[in-house]
Length: 238
Length: 141
Image (cartoon, rainbow over all chains, first blue to last red; front, side, top):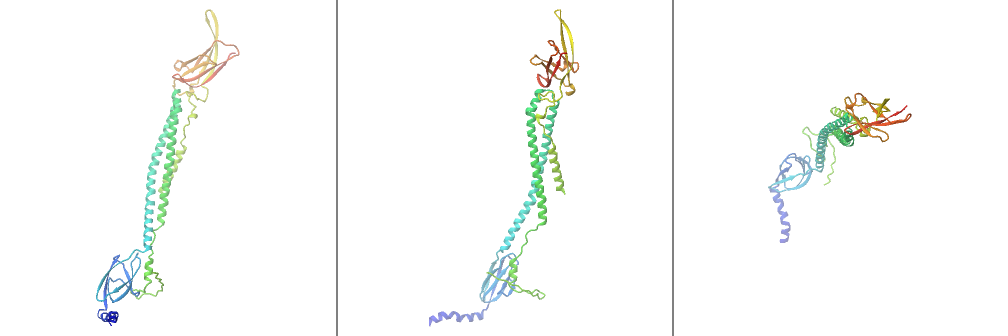
């Protein structure tokens, strides 16, 4: 007898308490704080943060822009107010998009800023090299004039054996430096022009919120003017 | 547009750089004071006169061979010395431009035979250093 009471006792007493306290209150704190919507029991699309529900299990599907849907079930206790913090994690698509956007911005920043900086440096280098190259050329011309006007055989020998070869080496070095610096300048200018045009034509990656589409497919939600007919298929994989 | 202008400027710089000629010491041979001098003769035979002189009551004959220094190959007012040696192994003497009244100087030919050709080597120089020069020959007739 005692065994029968122990087994059936709680079930016999439940209808009495359900009848007396049949509703309970849920309060939500959301993360993110704004923009969270949810579908209650697969029927009602809501944004309320406080709601009173019949006692028992209720299925919620939460969603917010850029966030992943969260399917969960809350058990409403009659006569009690329960507080829940619902934290929605970022959607994989949004994380990918954010990474792609960061990459795009980083590449854009480097591609727009680095070539002009290199070009400016190369321009300075090219100008200095060109001036130095002119000086070396003038030095060679001076030596040529010294040779032409000299009446000193020993001086001429010295010119031809040491002064002119050394000046020639300096001249060749400065000319090479001029070629290299102007080449770098030309490449940097070309890169500047290319990236400027490239980024003028390109646009940052756009975010397509796939979770929103899935979420909106969960329930028909009429617009204020009566809504429109729409057909959709949503396959919830989780 | 601005980049095009800069690229044009770069191309101009490179062209200018390409067209600046170098100086090759082995190609410098135009200075008469250069021992590697290659060019027109610096010295040439101007003529010769025979003259007689008496020494110890003996009359001798000798040729005074006139040699022209082509100073038009030198810069104006350029001083120079001339080194001369009768070939093949005569004594070496020199002469400074201040000793010349004109572009001519003479060398004496005292022991000669008719029909023979006698040559001298002349070099241009200064400070006992010698540059370009050439040989001058005279055939006694």
